[in-house]
Image (cartoon, rainbow, N blue to C red; front, side, top):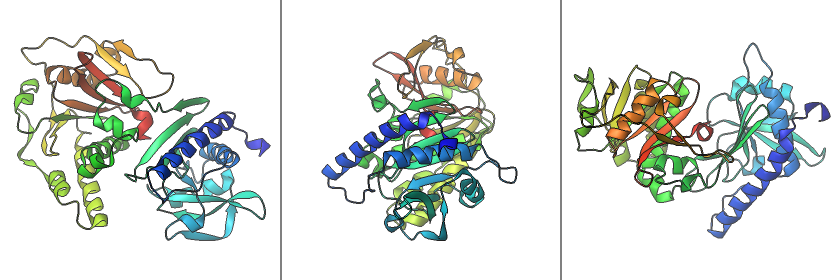
Length: 379
């Protein structure tokens, strides 16, 4: 493995191993049983190194986007097994890339005890909780994550981009007035919150908004209130009458067939997220009803201009900043900050074309608009 050295891997592996072991221990104390076998530091290090070099390769002009899970085939549900198994090498991963590009498909990696070497044993779609997962997002861009036991969603631990290492701050949810969507992305949302769906819907909307790559803004307003219209240029060209309520209807019957329900919910969420790619902002209320899209934000006539925004990122070592909203990005960011400044019971989710993602919400504790940078949690 000397020719595949990737310097950040060693320090990252030791820390990831310790964090995941602690999370698994806490889960066992809560009585949870479907928990992955504890990973090995050297295995984690090797997977990171091989995946990094695989991310820089091309196979028929395409760079691989793959997900690797350190899990025994005996712990996977209905796995697809290779025979013979493949060595864990950049070449093998690049070759397999086209077959496992879709979300939710993982290449299973485990140690061959006879050869004392890591190997790719096959493909799986279901993983035990707290299983080490490494996702290759783009050339040189890797994300370490694990599936959460309570919700089944993935929680990001660290983002590696070249020689930059960003560990997600476990205390990131402790900032004043932290939005539910940020708490959920950090893995600290309660199982009850996921059952009611609020965090789940807006996290999935954020992921879908970021995925389409066009940039966009989603304004979330209070159901039953029309005050938000005072901060929108009139007339509204694309207004939903009555409000489009497919997501809301699905959330009312989520106890039906789970597979079909998840598919229908994903399609509805992607449809709404797609509207955010149109120039302007999309408006949805907190009951998940679509109200309008392609709206233009205007300052409320009784409000001043927003002058300061508190900016934080749930990444270790990042400092909270107070900036003028024009320093956050383009027109979308400035407009979203102004909207939340005027409509203090609302929030705004803003995706940039360069991959940045910001959640704007009024902080009563700080008495200013708070911008939560969360792209490290959405990869």
